[in-house]
Image 1 (cartoon, rainbow, N blue to C red):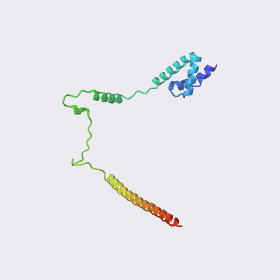
Image 2 (cartoon, rainbow, N blue to C red):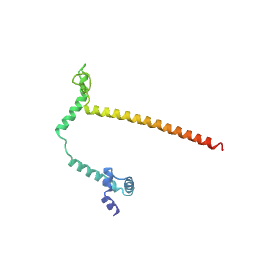
Image 3 (cartoon, one colour):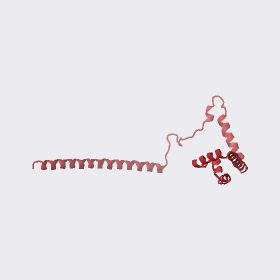
Image 4 (cartoon, rainbow, N blue to C red):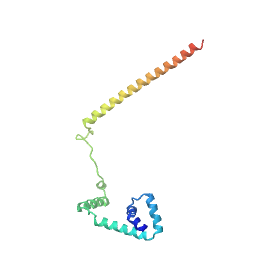
Length: 153
């Protein structure tokens, strides 16, 4: 009675699909040792899932098959001697006048603004660093002055 309840619980299907947790897998392995007939049930579930997958399978379109074979044949083609470039895809990045590559004006503006902001940040970083150094020197001088005034007494 316990075996039938275990079979109906769905653990075997989870195990066959690979979604069972490690504790469920360990439990199933223990049950397989106790009940050898459970192996037949696992095989039956595997066959049932396989039949269902094959029965409900969707065939790919003939166009897709043609494209895949075209791609495979393109890679396996033996190019004629002296024409090794037929296997490579080239991207033309030359501008219209052939002298330089152009960048969209909004990117130019973005880079200019970024450059200016970085220089401003650099200026403030140096400015506040120097201010910090000056205040630190003043504190050191004040300590030395207070130590000198306190020590003569």
